[in-house]
Length: 262
Image (cartoon, rainbow, N blue to C red; front, side):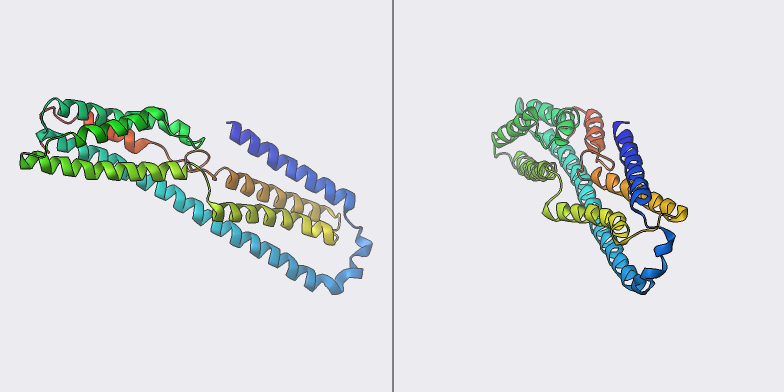
């Protein structure tokens, strides 16, 4: 709701400022004919600015969409690796088996409930890190015999390496846009501002239809910019990725029989 109100205020403020500028600094109709010979060049420059804005917006949208898609895919893969590691515990000896199962069941809960909210601020959860480190320690302490235990141990270690790598990628993404994303965001905002400022700088008539046109354009561009700013982070904002994969795997693990054999 806060984001909606902020967007509303920015859009309204942009429209008010644009209309006021048109009314205060717009030319009278008597000057229309004087600059007809420059209409083509002005139109060309306006088209260039519009084109640059559209290109920057397109690149930014693709970057954000891919980042969010990657974050969602990585979360699903990380959760699947947790479930696979849990299935390997069936042949592990006691008391390591129960302890490893407890840690594997706790990990997705911590990610969903504790770490995920912190990702919006680019932070990791210490308890989640400790749980993952404990898993490494417990699985490494498993005996290398018999062969079925050795196989389960190696498979579980592979899944833990995958979980660690995917979590590292998730924490990296929690830092927000990379340099290319920031550059395209800045270009998008500058292009939007230029599309409004350029007509005012070259001389815009204060006729009603022109003022309304500028007001509508300012509203649309302001909304687009607010939307872009709301998509700068994959774990917060408009298109934020949710921890559904970890919630689902928690339920899946709870349904695995205690004597399940991987």
